[in-house]
Amino acid sequence: MADTVTITDNRTGNKVECPILDGVYGAPVIETKTLYKELGMFTFDPGFVTTAACRSSITYLDGEKGVLLHRGYPIDQLAENSSYLEVTYLLIYGELPTTEQFEKYKADLNKRNMVHEHLERFYSGYRYDSHPMSMLIGVTGALSSYYHEAMDINDPDYRELTALRIVAKMPILAAHCYKHSVGHPFVYSRDDLGYVENFLNMMFSVPMREYEIDPIAVKALNLMLILHADHEQNASTSTVRLAGSAEANPFACISAGIVTLWGKAHGGANEAVLKMLAEIGTTDNIPKFIARAKDKSDPFKLMGFGHRVYKNHDPRATIIRKMCHDLLETIDTIDQPAFEIAMQLEEIALKDDYFIERKLYPNVDFYSGIILKALGIPTPMYTVMFALARSAGWVSQWLELMADPDFKIGRPRQLYTGSENRDYVSIDKRG
Image 1: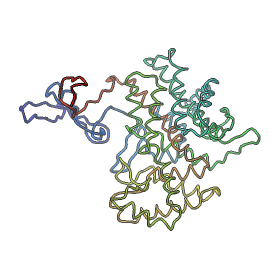
Image 2: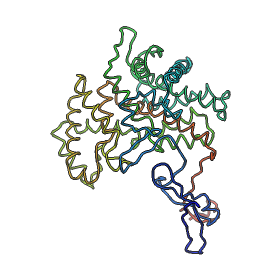
Image 3: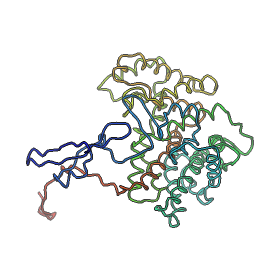
Image 4: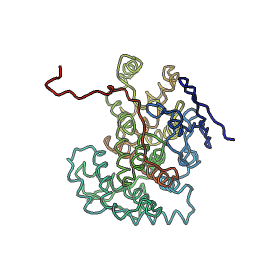
């Protein structure tokens, strides 16, 4: 017999037995589907911080131990040995590919690494100084115009085709956001380049000269994309799933995820780190800003430290920290003052009792912003890079949702605290 938890209404004495469900890892989950039927009650959980909204076999993280697994593979092993494109295959199909499977996957992506020429004109509707995330939201949603009536989301083959299109087209959309912002002509995708190399070429090549792809930059960006590919049921992923539960067009669902990711408390954090470094200005100002961060009455916050889920070291930060230091030793175009400020802040956070006691260790956003800056990617593009990486996780989560036998439209409940029932009073009789 399965383990259960008895929930008792102390007002009436009525009880309900709720099954306890165990996953492969993680805290057990109390299934409360019968709570309203038996007791006429819902649970109250602001932010859904103790609510499991789905079953998933894609990503597991343990915030206390600093563990992150994709389909069972530790993130450090994937970061060390894999490529971002191989990780996208793993997320979508559940297993690492054989050589034959991977070659077919790359060929399938190459068949779809263009966007409709008419879509290119969408960018001209944006001002040159529009935030790239606002453009990415719009053009990603616009893809649904090209893949709508002919697409059956209940057909597994169509869903797989959607996943391939997302992985193939997101680098194009992202690179075009940058090209529009600087007034450069769009660069078409190339089949002869790897996934990351192709993206860098679309970003930085220009017609008048050949662009030389730096292998160090490729390695750094590949690592960045792997570390951001998926992260369990975060705000943007939950948004994609909620939109998908309404059977919305999958490209619109991905666009909804981008909307959520744009929040500075979510994907905008790495952009906020660079703004913070610019605000600090010089290393001489660091003590003043550290004091402000410790002052509860001061609204200033040190960005890039601590994490909502990880209560210990962010495992992604441990991996990316080494790449950050290696990269900055080899690239001579870095913003030296910002780098020096960042490194001193890192040293303080790892030694200062205030940070250690509160587990405010540098997180992945702290290092990723520095790396992107060193690669020549402008600050407004940082969250776009995050969206590019996370799109593989989003579409994998969408695929899992659509195949879930418990599929149903999301419908959170509420605790109503408004006015009681009252009658309408005409305007001339209101006091």
